[in-house]
Length: 481
View 1 (cartoon, rainbow, N blue to C red):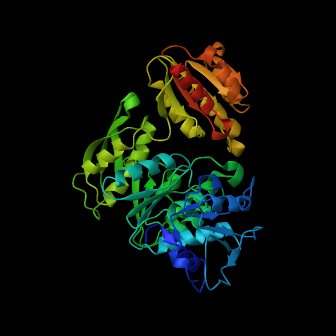
View 2: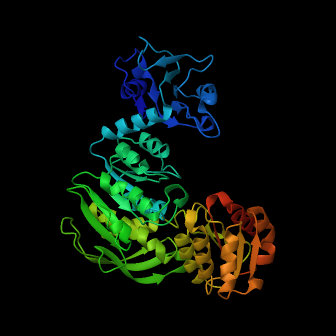
C-alpha cells in the first residue's frame, strides 16, 4: 500500500479502539489545512482560525479529493463518525469528529514521530537566523542522508505537526524550525518532535510586546535545550551569554559555536566574496566524542554577509556530529545557495537588489547594513518599521538609524516607527537631502524613481507586515522592462 498512512492508523492514533472494516483500505497520501491546496487522498484538518473557520470548507475539500477530514463540530449534509463510537464499516470519504482539531493534528504528529525511534531530529530556535540556520543544516545533512525539513514558515504549533506528518520511511533525519510567541510554546513543540539535537542561534529583543523582557525571551528559547534527553546534543551560540548559559538536562552534551576563543567550533579569516558569499576557516576543538578527521578547514558559504557564517558554523557542527566528512559539509554549504534572506536579485539595468523584506529586528537590520556597506557603487537602503520590539521600539529604531552612517548613501524609510530611524541617521551626519520618509510600501514604490539610480545596490528590509516586497517587485519589473 502506497501513501503516508491509512485511515485505520489515524483512527488508532486518535484513540479509537475498534478499527472499522474498510479503514485500512483508505490510503492517506498527505495532510492539508487549506481546501484550495487539497490533493487526491489528503486528510483535511478543519482548523478554527482568527479570520476563518476550516469547517466552512470541509465539503469543498472532499469534492477536491480529500478522503477524510478532522472536524470538531458536525457539518450539514456531511456524514461523520465519532472516535469514541466508530461504526462497523466505512465507505467513501469520512469526517472524524474530535474535540479539538488542532490537538488532534498534534496527536497524530506525535504518534508518527514516536514510531520512528531511529529518526534523528534536529530542532532549531533563536530570535534571529533560525530559518537560515535550518536551511544550512538541511542542505548539509542532505549530502549524506535523506532529510525532511520545515518548509516556509512551518515553525509553530500548526506548521511543525504538518511537517512531521510528511515524514516517510526513507527519511533518516528531520530538521525542524521552532518559533514562539510565549513561554511554553517551544516546550510543546519539543514534546511533539522529541529532538535529539537542539540548536539555539541567539537571543535578541524580539517579541518583547508579548514576553516583556529579554530574560523571558531567553527562558522561552531555553525550552529547547532543556527538552533534550540523555544522549542529546545542544549546539549553542557561544558568543551570546544568554545562550551559552542555558541549562541542560543530565547526560546532554554542550557544543559552543561562534567567533570567540571559547567556542568548540570557531571561525576566523573571513573573506567577503560579495554576491558570491563568504569564505572562512573553521577550527575544531574539544570534540573527542566525535570522529573528526581534521581540526581546521577552509570553507565557503553561498549566503551573503559575515553574519551568515554563524548559521554555517552551526550547520558544520551538526554535520560533524552526524558523521559527515569535510567534503560533504563543504558541498552542503555551497548547495544552500543564497538562502531565504538577503537574496540578491537583478533590478533595472545596472541595479543590484538585496532582498531581505521577510522580517527585521535591530540586530539583523544592522547586519544587513554591514553587508550593504561592502557592496560596490552607490548604496541605497529602503528600511521599514521593525515591529514587536515593545519597550525597545524607540531605542531599536534609533540604534539602526545611527548605524546607517558610513554604510548608506541614500536612505528611504517606510512607516511611522522608521521615522525615528531617519531622524537618528540625520542626527549622526547622514545629509538630510539624502533621507526620504514615506508612510507605506505603496508610497515607497512611487518614490523609487527619485531614490534609485543606475548602478545602485539597494537593500530592502523591514518587518514582513510592512509589505516591502512590492518595492523589490517594482525594481524587478523595471529590469524586465
